[in-house]
Length: 156
Length: 185
Image 1: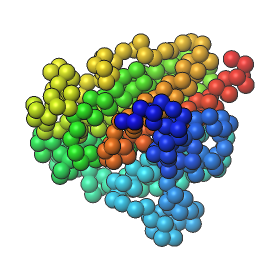
Image 2: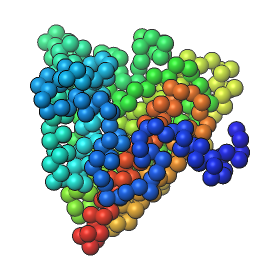
Image 3: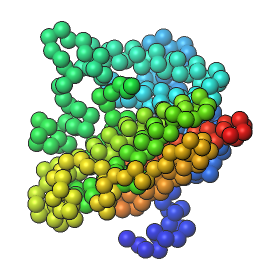
């Protein structure tokens, strides 16, 4: 560990470089407190999301070829992130119609994907247990248990 | 009332166990700027907040912080899997291990158990929101320090996500402060 790097201002800049690329405002906590909608949205959301949410896409996943990459679980996770981000934004901007419209489209698509997931994989919440044979809610993997190399012996 | 969703907010897939890193990152769960304190701070501050917008942001950020507790605990859990006694001692994880094994216990990296002394909650709305702005900055600084000490890309991916959320929360709390000022609180 280079002591100089930890203590001087240059070290902080270096730090911001390392963690940069996360968002536009990632390195700057002193940014605009008044919350520019576009700035925040673009900064914190996955670019794919914009394609996916185009209004003319009735079937979101295939709309305009703007598919979210990854498994169904990963698509749900991405949409849940958009949902949370919009909820926080709407808390302090409750009359923003652009964000409201974005929110309703996000939730509609999320409900559709969640139903597909729960019918084919398993319950995402307890009330998503659809089996009449088994309470699948208790079946792994739990979120901290990862397949294969990531597993502990006890997770198998 | 809360509903649990069986999914992490951001993936945690750590390839290599690392007891030394686990002993550092546990502070993001139970340390003075950790996620346990964050959730407790915001969820308890809500009750006497005088504006629905501010109650909303405290509710939703506090809820997200519970998800972050789960992410940090998942990192520590995966970093400590299948360790031998020699690895535990070599990694400096022995002092944690002797009390908790590889169980998840909210404590600081120095071994101080989680303490509500690290949070504040006041009826005075502006005082609480200033506490929240400071808390997000301190947590962001803690994650910066973790990134300085970690060279594991799997760990850093999740830590960078958590760090970024502190920045977003700071932004929203800044707006909450302006809302309170506009209403002359």
